Amino acid sequence: MSNDERGSFGIHGTGDTSGYGGLVRNQVSPGSTERPFGGYFDQVTDDLERAYPDFADAIERIVVDRGELTLHIKRERLVDVALILRDRLKFENCLGVSGVHYPADTNRELHAVYPLLSMTNNQRIRLEVSVPDSDPHIPSLVEVWAGNNWNERETFDMFGIIFDGHPGLTRILMPDDWQGHPQRKDYALGGIPVEHKGATTPPPNERRSYK
Amino acid sequence: MTGTSNPYIPILVIGAIGLGFALFSVGISLLTGPARYNRAKLDAYECGIEPSPQAAEGGRFPVKYFLTAMLFIIFDIEIVFLYPWAVTFDQLGLFGLVEMGIFIATVFVAYTYVWRRGGLEWD
Amino acid sequence: MGLEEKLPSGFLLTSVEKLAGYMRKNSLWPATFGLACCAIEMMAAGAGRYDLARFGMEVFRASPRQADLMIVAGRVSNKMAPVLRQIYDQMAAPKWVIAMGACASSGGMFNNYAIVQGVDHVVPVDIYLPGCPPRPEMLMDAILKLHDQIYVEKLGPNRELVIKNVEAAALAALPTHQMKGLLA
Image 1 (cartoon, one colour):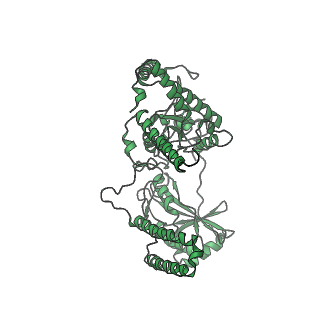
Image 2 (cartoon, chains in turn yellow, cyan, blue; image 1 turned 90 degrees about the vertical axis):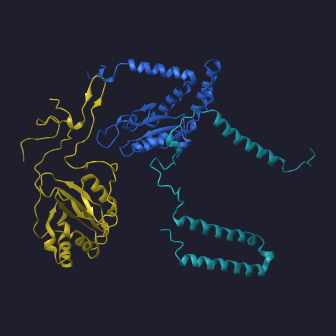
């Protein structure tokens, strides 16, 4: 927790008045939660453990935070666990892949998050996979949930996570020959200064403090 | 003037007016209007993106388009034969019914063949 | 052949200019280029209450070959820019462009890597229409101003004269960053 508060109006430090720098809060990552989890989370983890004997080896940690269950999985076991979840535990619906970039977390910079929904049991869980920036490969879940096709392309485009086994992993939002992955934390905003009569307004991430 | 003139004269007049209008429109747009050359105007229109590869040189189209067109022709001709039968159904009686039944059965055999051989699968 | 551009300057050319201007402004057909939120307002302008059909413009042509006005309604991303240019190129002359909304005029609120900061980087624009989104009445006002512009457009040698004068004036004019506005 640094003393340098960045972010809102009238705050010294970087002098950023737009709020673009983002508030810096004391981000404590919730560690592994102990049982009992509460609600249907116990039942889901028990079923998963019974259906998948290598459970303890595959799951890095289980986090129950703010009423939501997140299973952190090793990327080598991702497809097996996903198949078990879809077939045995009836999580038919995967709501896509989201990418997250934690530049400060060496060797676990890029995360891919899969929210799963079971309509038969009315349950929601989340799978999270962490990969280092030097080797950003995750097995593709297109054969498990076909709807993940374009979502994985988007995560590749925005974060650079390469999904092995994807039938056609190309850029989807940016032009095909774009260099860089825009949603990473170290990617510049790319704004240009705005020309008015007699003055120029810099882009939001470069504005000075008006103090 | 007393009603003995050819009843098809008005149709001819309308046809001539239509043809004249079309020729006038094409002709006037050839004469007036700026003519600015732009290479993009010669491209096929495909919503602004590069047109997908044309089958111009080898004439290689996916065969499913040809099959669909052929099947449409055959069954359309069958329907063309069915229309007059429907109009004169009473006069033709039982003989017509049996004969048209044999006709439809013959085409149905061809249809079953196409169906079982996978000709109706698009992908 | 463009016969009307080959007439010599004089009374005949002026009459033809007025006639051609009147015809062209009253028969504009827009091309559908609704990209984002401004497209909704463009649709509202074409619908019942704010009627574009009173100008004969309710037919939004899908094919650029049949259109002569391109209303760029919405933000143009870097991926869309070549598509925009291709559609503009495939339109037949005479053609006009209205940049509808803040994003089409200048990039709007999106000053980042993904959005083209004003479609005049890609196509020549005749009318810039601010707003986020501009109300349908504002779009109709822009169309009426464009009608006035089209009515007085010159042809042939008069047009070349106008182009020469406009270019000379633009070269001699004060650049924007040297003007004194409210922020200086």
